[in-house]
Image (tube, rainbow, N blue to C red; front, side, top):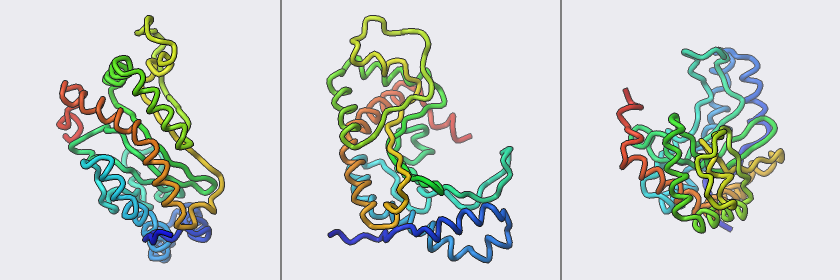
Length: 240
């Protein structure tokens, strides 16, 4: 069996995370800061460490810094209506460095008090740019359908949060037509069995799913690179 840095996220650590949010107290947080770090933050960073080799193999532009990749327990409430200072859910992104590659497709892992999930996501602030994905789907329909199948094999379910009402591609093949309405896409898996994140076997599960779904990430990455080349996404627009 592989030796991993990650040993698991324990139920008592998740419970403490929830209690910390409930208290919403700087004093309580400071008193339990080291326990939260050791039980939540460190294991999340270890997931990145254990997956960094695979992620770099999939995309050599992938950021694998475990500190930057993991969400913080302490929330920045500036400009946010929700003034709760602490989280009870945590996540991490496997993606390119966002200042150089804003809105790039990414893998993710997250957990809540009652479930965990992972998968691939491609969201854009400018939905019109997503037509580059549509264009590539039309140009390479077999490759696209193979990528969709790879996600199914990984146990991931397709979801689109926003769709075009107008049919911009009336002559497209029916097999790809549903995807040509999308303004964004994700392929995700969720489970209520939190015992599965309390063991190193989680790393094997994530590795298998992320590697199996690699064709979809590469398809999206190519479409994204086309957006960058055509000036549809400009890093300077997101870093001011």
